[in-house]
Length: 79
Image 1: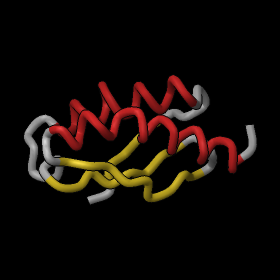
Image 2: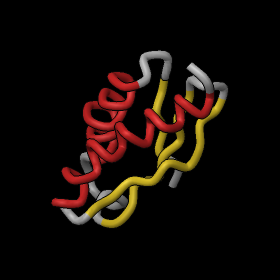
Image 3: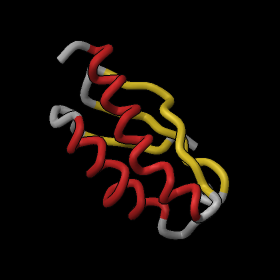
Image 4: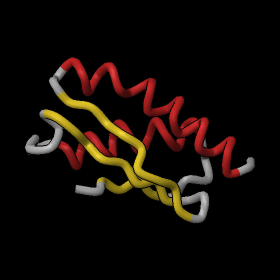
């Protein structure tokens, strides 16, 4: 998978999870992808101060991204 395909698939994964975040007043934005294995995102809106945002990041966002792009090893939130 090329870097461009990885980026497109990560964006598709974020589009899949975005409605759930938006329903709670939050959102997510792709900041970048390093070495085709590390995805940097930024949680926005209500997600910023939410006490369960790390759980959302791991259980929801990271799992969905890995489903679309299996070689992604980690997803981190850039604050």
